[in-house]
Length: 327
Image (cartoon, rainbow, N blue to C red):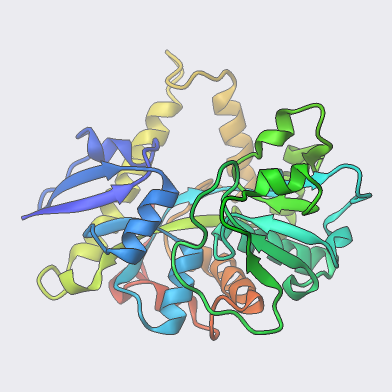
């Protein structure tokens, strides 16, 4: 039987798709797509046997007890998100602490990037998610809002924008004061609109955050349909090892010095710098090594009202994968 995998095309997944890394037991049909599309398919249809999944949505559904997938501690997407805070430059917003009482737009309230940024705002600046008015909608053109229904506490000021509106339109018109988004609003490139990034030196802010917390924020995990596990009980462990091998293959190839495999000079030096910052492994898979980071993300999801209760990080992942470590 051929099993389907849905994921974003990256250097960490392509070795499986193009055959550089193969399974000695399973055959996989890999489907590439953008995160927003893949998550809607996973959460609304559960179309694919194995899927890349938003950690925010995965925590939400696991806490509710209604998830059709169980996670594997493979993290295809990680990203610092200091670059994803956009503000009106005419609003005297100097830090995340200045957002208290203001209106902030997000593409989805359950989006993992936003959960991390609201956690940063609470931990570092003392502003909790219920201190801000949140407006939810598509970024640069009218489109859908939340990928799945979430129920938030009544005291939270979280509302969808009107049909036909979009966040970039609202920040351009001054109807919202900021946007949290991993993608840029179009107005950022329009010199006539007073919109800019909050952090002027994004790399410096992100390095400082990493040095302080030890976190390289996890955005997505791999997940497998629960209905497959009776027939294929070794599949979670097999997938972990396969994706770990693919990541190692990609990294080894990227660091070859005879011909640049990526169109960027000094890549090896940058990799060494970041690996040292992360304690040797710049992109770790596995539960134990990421336990503190996942616990923080769960805490933020509970604080936001997205997760209905506290859960243990281990509840997100299949038991057979709890002790696995990558290269």
